[in-house]
Image (cartoon, rainbow over all chains, first blue to last red):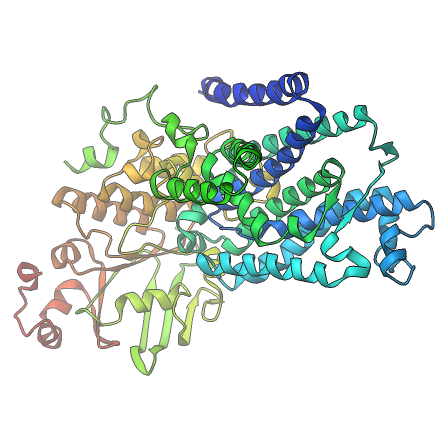
Length: 371
Length: 252
């Protein structure tokens, strides 16, 4: 029985494993050999968006939380990384260039910890995680959900962008932080290092997908779906749904933070424009189109939408927004499961009945007993 | 079975919505092994009383289960104390399999590490419940594909694996066929032997066949309490049931 079940699990996992292999080959082998350095760097940025998308797939697709404000966590991770890189470029005890131009010429106290690479790496995960926990717990405990949660999260993104713009002397204001020269000691003008950044982002995406897969398969993943579909019922089973949702929300925020931190060295800039309402919605569109409750859908959707956006806006500069809107409306109206639903099967719908036992054969014991 | 029998004790329970007293001073005690039916005309406050016991409706008075005071606790804490309930409309997790539904119901005590791993084996309690409620052959089916009766049985199974000591069932046989009602009644008797079971019901035949004791609610108050036949013979009860005679079963 157990051996058979394990064998069955492996068999069921085969399509997923093949999916991982396909994405790995496409990103780590095919793309680097086909694309120019410029295109590869662009794809690297999209991979960072895809990392955010994996998190949104978890929170929205599996957890039912329509997070319209992931730009905040993307931004937190990105700004933490950007602060470190600015300080690193300025040298030990040095002051970043823009602070000398616009500010007092002194580094504010809350920048200082980010001189340390270790603190930076921890903060990339911890800052979005802690902020998301505090907000998520407060929001979900008060049973705020649905459209109210979506509006709240979007307002958060707007407020965050405005806050950044207002702090010209410490965050670079509208310009954001840019003009980086090195990443943890590696020269960013060296093409080899730029290539390595792409590989780093791609490998991170694969790791995030693996983490998402484990979560989907886990008991927690089942519980999250249960909370999404019947929150009250879960409460009557003795669980606190607020905690279940907060965990997914924090994980999504951490993934967004990691995506943001990798985005900075690849794109060479982070500004309020990358973290506000518009990019937050942009993250969502790829997820919706790819299939929000599937494993690969969000990431592939994010990659495809970002790629389409770049190609289309190069050819038809003013058309993209309309196209994006139309696509979103089309998917929401006609393909709520995303493009993944077109394949006719959900990659993660494991344990479908069928195969071993035909349930119609055996009447339930109680029915037999009662007749 | 156990040395000290569990019991659920309500005293002077009141629930008020915007000045309307849905439950107006109900006191009752339900002992372990006593299959208690809660009947009464529409609006009598039956479901509201169950809501009060399970923490969904804010109430005053006192509701105790064993040594624990239930009033004022959040819903999930009350559930963890061993109070389980079902709803008029079966609310199972339709996207998940029967097995997954039961596994979730059995898991409120699980730690983070267990939760983050996939289920490798079916817990013994889940296996037992699958047999008890007769869904063993349907374990891999999505709960949304079950028949109405099977969903209600799944709900009862979820209460069993949840290790509920008190089972509050809101119209468990509504919409069931005669065979399904019979099966459900037998199931309730089987699981009720060492638990405290409260059944909110409209079906008088079902009540007569399976109730150990009956509490009749009317306008938020206890109108009568006792055995099924005694209660049905009570003229006050006959009066609130549209003034008809004792043959309520045929009408209902």
